[in-house]
Image 1 (tube, rainbow, N blue to C red):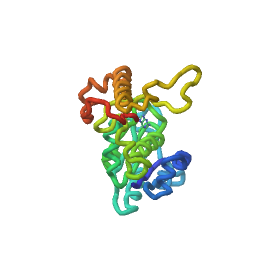
Image 2: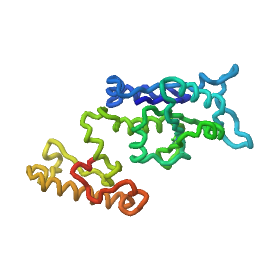
Image 3: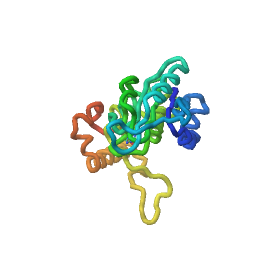
Image 4: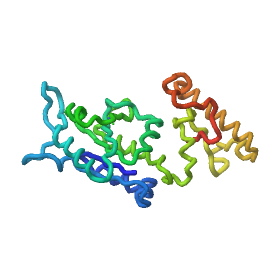
Amino acid sequence: MRFDCLTLFPDMFPGYLGQSLLKKALDRGLVEVHLHDIRQWAKGRHLQVDDRPFGGGPGMVLKVEPVVECVEAVQRQGPAPGRVILLTPQGRRLTQPIVEELSAERRLVLLCGRYEGFDQRVIDILRPDEISIGDYVLNGGEVAAMVLIDAVIRLVPDVLGDRSSSQEDSFSTGNRWLEFAQYTRPREYRGLCVPEVLLSGDHEAILRWRREQSYSKTRQRRADLFESPAAGRERQSDQPSEGSNR
Ligand code: 6GU
């Protein structure tokens, strides 16, 4: 799968790209990430990418020409233009079903904004899929793009060592449950003990305990996952399953 990130701050990405699961996926050729500096498409002596808003108001707006021309040039690279995603707090909120949908694409072109946003004509011309990662405001779309990449590559075949470990993820299609508590050695630390049932070797009992954990944690923390038909729309399961643990 190929990602193209269009940004004024390409240097924000390499730290993240060089670590962990993503680095392994890049090294193994399962995922490609290409960075593009929007400023390289700016014109004039000052390479201006932003300007004051017509009608007044605070802050600066990203100009239409460098952004549109950058996206179009990037889309011409490679065999397919890819799906354009604009990261913006005005977008539809990213959820695991949307992550699943995006993971089926071969190429995503991620457009990261800054300042007070884009000239509306960027959106009118490119018709991007506008996505937000939550109801709070970031200084720009770069961190949101990294969040999106991180969530999507988990679902790219072979990126996770064990394929099944993403299928049981919380919030994914078919799982509306939060994860149960996990323990590893030592059996006791500062007087806190691992629950007996997990040491019992009784797989039926362990399964029941984990289901109950998932259920009560979800009820306490995220009752909305039970109640809201919209939230549950794409999640069919009414019982936490054995591995509803992510
Ligand atoms: Cl995608 N961008 C910005 N700037 N702020 C956000 C966001 C995106 N998602 C939530 N807040």
